[in-house]
Image (tube, rainbow, N blue to C red; front, side):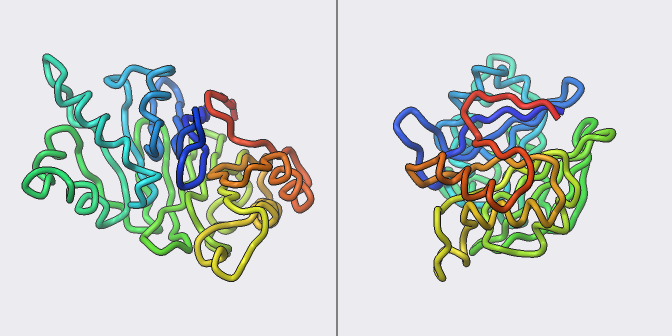
Length: 247
């Protein structure tokens, strides 16, 4: 399995950056996970829009899905059309995504996507990859995701405040990709996001092999890495656009 970072900025992209988005590839099967601002442009550095095999959206906050729209048009206007693409996301996501399309948009999106609503805790498969989910601590329904293929495992926190649900699902993963939005936790932030130290603590309690920080908002990114490393006895890296990591 291979993870490629398409974007790792939290909430809004930096100059030249992109919000949350990743490619998970295994045995020739390509999954686009979250489609935040700027990720579609970066996607095409790695794969043609017609060669994406499935999409998984963690939750209905714009910084995780707005590039679904240009991707929709890129497939809709192919000369010979495109086979509907499996789209997995939390229950209710399609209604949010379609709300800005004409006539409510559900029918329009159905011309490009084959919708699969996911209840947190559900398991599904796409290609050779088994996908397990859990509910995260966030204001809208949000899926934590565990990707499994053969003996390889990848965990993705999506957006969340501190929660034992995160630890349970990603126990023993080879790599944990987790948000570290803020440098220091506050009362308000813990209802929404993890601090770097909390990301490291959750990874340590889960027994993850490696830790990669994403959804980064603080300007001192090396400071984020250091805070997480103080809580996690393993390799800690920052998610960098274009970076590909083999598991």
